[in-house]
Image (cartoon, rainbow, N blue to C red; front, side, top):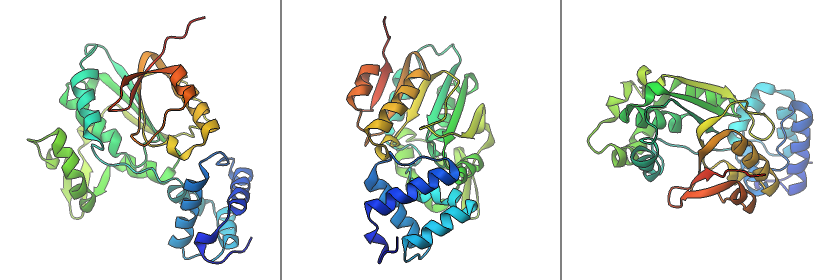
Length: 278
């Protein structure tokens, strides 16, 4: 399995490593999109200055702590505060006002480091619905979840988040939502109300709850068609009747998904659960 430069890893070596990971840790990445997976492996090798896949193989299989952290590099799920502001404006102006007297449940599937979850919290608070809403946030990566739970982000990141933030809140300041200290900003505690984070593998883990809104944004880009179908079935089963699924701008809804969901809003990639008959 030895190779030269890390960018020369081939498909056979990727497949062999994924089989070994599945046997060792019970995590099956064999149906993840091959190009993205290969890119993640190369990124991991370069980060740790590894010169061969044998070196990576040995480290991953012998060191569980290393592997837990390596998941972040293998499956980069980019997120940011108020990413795609149109989505949040649509939620505020159209979705959330409906049945505003009722409690609701929201699931962020593949929440990464939590920026999207806290964005939702800010939007709910602005709409007067935070106290009536239970938010569940899940991800496969333990280290990403730990960052999400802390709600702590570097001031450098906060500077990058300012533009989309101001598109939603043109007359507000990030300091209304974060406590700044030294080089970090931490989400104010009142915005962590009714929020829970937990580890969950979309591919194999059940979800024994029903939700009114599910956000699974830019997660399916890492899956092949077989895996997308499996995940879409899970999301469908996890939605209440006429529940809303929001996917990412880069996600492509396969034909199977079109049998389960009707388009609600093309621009913001929102879909409504179909009523199944028969």
